Length: 231
Image 1 (cartoon, one colour):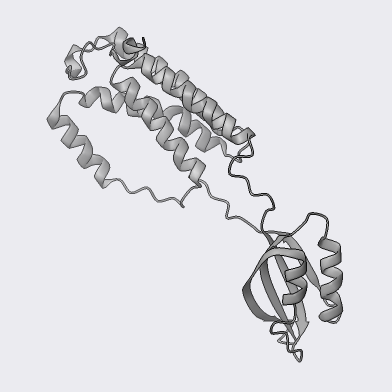
Image 2: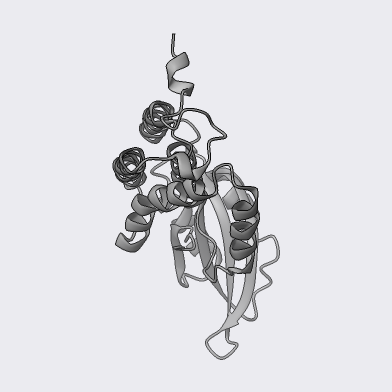
């Protein structure tokens, strides 16, 4: 029933770029721009983002579409473009999984439009966008209790090895020692754990129990920081 979605506006998938008319090329450009804007809008749903990355996502299908249209059916041009892209070095810090997935999403749209499969590109965009939004709204993949960072200060003359294990076992589902370091000119130790609370709302009881053991020194509990990345 949806076989027409696999029909290219260029006629055949191996048609040469010389066989592409101006109207067909402009139609593919328009489709790339519209679908690119949709993919960028879906990326911004419940996600931290920068305007530069959103604009790049919106334009990426158009760029990929133009390149694919130019090399469509031309082996020499395809090898030349591959060589040019092989010289490019993208000097940016790694993005998150959603950033990388959105880039591949935009590229797939550009590939479909560049080959002239506009109906397929629209169907693909709708399916991925709906699935993306549905997964973002649903609790799928969400941890029941997020990881938190617990930092405990202890005096330098206190033997703290295993001192807090019983308290952590009582209030947390899991705890892991991350780091031990000196502070305050070596007069204090700071012990850092990554923990997951057994039940929500027991933070105060746990901190009070720890304060009884560390001499009422500083105890800090907060969300585990995540590295902010951008492309």
